[in-house]
Image (cartoon, rainbow, N blue to C red):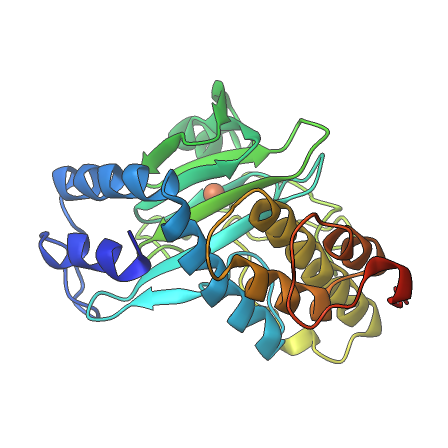
Length: 275
Ligand SMILES: [Fe+2]
């Protein structure tokens, strides 16, 4: 299975065309969730996604939050990877349209909040807490607030298939979002952020601290991809690992060079430079 096959699943569904001011019905989102469920356990699909993601990383476009490596034509549906070092969380945030989230590697803890009560009381009101392991695929249909976190000591990776309308203001947008802070996000300085999922911060492109943070995150993405690719034995993977090598930090380069498989264009470990 490849990304194009997932696109076919959407083409045969009732999702509104791109630009149409409508949401799909719940049954369509559940059907799409099933398609994603089959996809994320398929290594060929994951490799195809990672090939596209690497292209995005190589383009070195500043990004923050979920940046799609592919947008399904005709529907505008976004497909993106999420990377989770140990302890990582984007903080509590709100999805304003449907989204499907799959755990690809390791696991995530997800806290959900009672959206209505949270707005009413102006504080986050917990509702549920669950652990999602690799292969678990959940979906959000109505606007929701949640907080995923990697509470493990290993890296996690997730795949997100989202409505083009996710992040758009809702009719009740005039109410302030229940306050939260997130020191993990650059430029926030611990200040209150909007509740909507953070988008690219084009205005901050000249901020050296942000540039350094974005570069560190790019290397973190490459490290995450490398670890996943290292576990997959398929044609095409060595070539992707060679591309990761070019973008990686020294420790990841060392990891790739010492792998027990032939990676094109990479010398023997003893003769390679890792600076
Ligand atoms: Fe989310």
